[in-house]
Amino acid sequence: MLIQKETNTNTRTFTKIIRAVRQSLNGEEHDYTQGDLRKAIFLLAVPMILELSLESVFAVVLLPSD
View (tube, rainbow, N blue to C red):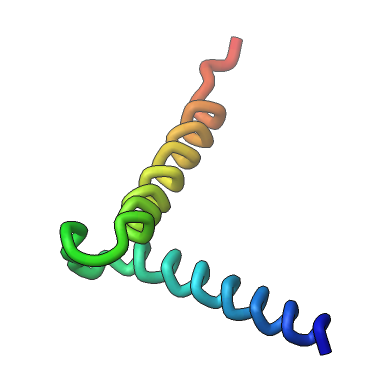
């Protein structure tokens, strides 16, 4: 019973994270001054991390060949 309860808790946590990532990438308007500060920071951080990752990929792909 304890293992099933842990699994349900982990599943709910994972679902919340996936929902927040989708919300951050959808481009919906969100009032970051209202609500949970941690969620607001997460919603702003996901696109920034994605942008930095893609910039690194472009830098590697566009290296001048000698």
